Length: 100
Image: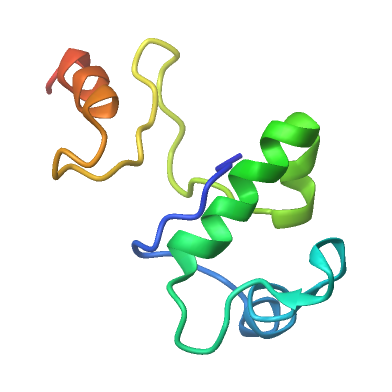
């Protein structure tokens, strides 16, 4: 499971975008999850994190986002992150991964 939306290359059904990503969220007073022209990673991703904190990993089922690709070995976890020093903790973790 990917518990936060990243606005990098992704695969998604257009109906899911229309109905879910840009749809109204009854758990948030019927407000739109992302307004027209809004930045999905910022708003939608924040909702995902908020729900995961409140409801744990069970919240993921509502969003259905996954990291796509071949699984890696347990000692070489897959990482999705900004590599522009956006989050120093992620950069530290990435720098510890073995290189090929």
